Image (cartoon, rainbow, N blue to C red; front, side, top):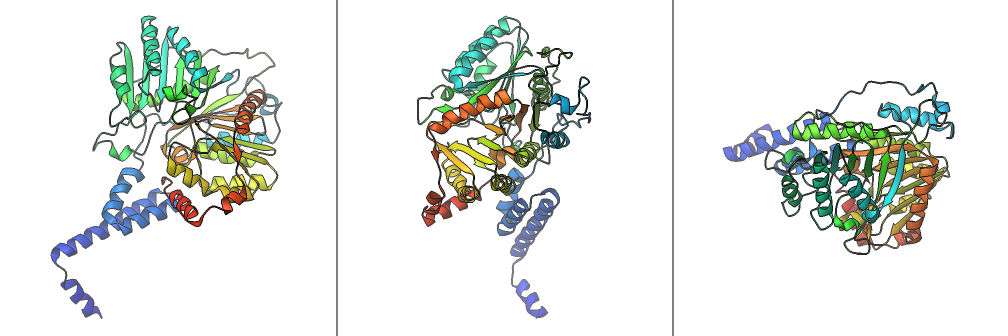
Length: 488
């Protein structure tokens, strides 16, 4: 037998043996890297299967998309302080209007990301570009010190031209203007038209987050800065998931219009936004950044009234554990009455799906509002693959008609609010740089719940029978596209 093996090897040419050796080295070497650096079993199995089935192509794809090389200068070890006392008040006193059950959840959240809540904030929801853009532009035009903007998408069109003109006025006022855009989000036909326009504004500084320059930046092409932040003079911020594009004001256009929500913020939580912008700016430009404006506080420390505790939760692939996903998971487990989710893309991994099912099975009212059609057809198919299991567990899934609704809100028990840029999918939870704000406010939760109820009035409730009646070929298609979820 051993002789037969030797004879079979002897029949191959040196070139064939070399190619076979290279395939073995690539497959084994890449698999070892996967085993050492990937914590998720599903992700590991997928990558190992790919590199063994196709060693050359699989290894190249893994190098480009599977390895996180982003070791950002902005990643800092945060020194743990304590929640137990703040301005002479204990947690129980500070959160006296909220359920005691939240004490454990607050401690959990602090263990996940040790950033303190700050108090005295104001958060006002603005629906669509129709409400948000005029308010943004007015405050930008009157800026005297500093304008900081980070946006995943910043189109150049008839609506965003108004922002460019506002920048010019602010610069004349003496304000410093810094704009950060994503290298992929702003890419249109391999060209970023907004970059040229920003370059032409004298006195404006801009940066592009990981532009896909071949071959230098190709290993980072799957890692995007998805944050949307605007801070003016340290006094006013706009924060959420809304990009800068005329699609956000074309809300009557069923095909191209986009519904969305952003938040006008005042108060000390803006200081946390400034720190995250600083980290992004220094990473992109390599230049030191120091804000010339500091946020004002809206309350006196000596007053008994401590309004709207809030804290920023930034996240990205440089945080190994997936901070936002952990906070989401913890919040689902903490819910006792109601879970309300509105998101444009709903394709989380099994751990989140199982937590949602368990919440519904223990009697929590779980409602998920998603678009009937997203801007990606394959996403529509993949999302449907999870419907039946959720509905059979008691989850209610509503699908809103066009135009595409890009809103992102997560509410727990009508008192805990989670807003920001993150979608409910693997890309946001593991690959993108995102930021959300965690807020305790019954008033804000009520206001947002009313907005969502208005959206639900136009939505259609998905039934289990509809999922069961789906033709076999469509079910196969949906489950196949679910497998295309980006590996973390």
